[in-house]
Image (tube, rainbow, N blue to C red; front, top):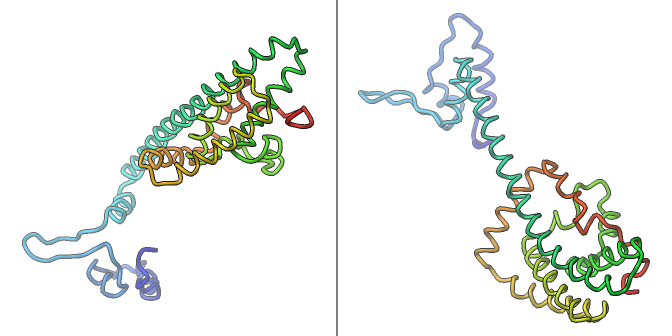
Length: 249
């Protein structure tokens, strides 16, 4: 893969002879006949055969079953440690979003207490308010996203870019303030949408801290499905369908 000049025909011819009792092949001859790279032979006092670490591991695994088993076990250990680290990072990301959402729902709760609505109507209001945020930041409701991505694990926030996650947290905090100040839903949506556009313009520039966050979040995507259960908790806004019919009723 790393050597386009490798002569596969010559290699096949040598391997075909390898089962004979009289067959012998030096590393130097292998390199000369196949144009192989990653291995070299040197003569002299400090001479010997030197190989790339990948070749060395493969050779050592071939001659020593114990070493082969050690490599497998160590690889499994490293992957297990990586999965644990990724799970922690993924959870930290989700909990950060949920913390801001808690402030948002508390603001909604304070307004609902003044209206004495039945429980089912309160659930609709919570879902509707969550979709005000979704529309402002992502341009669609949670239900619309799930319909477009049937079979996907998690929700739209799990697949958001780091810039969208930063904006999402800021918009949730701003929305809670606007709710407490009594702005109606349409006015709040207009204000939030304008703020989203303003923040996107600012964050469109190269910002080192944003790039570092992006690297962390991209690393968590390799562990898809490991912590999906956390995304199904009842306080997650994406788990409530928008049942109100029209968003700004």
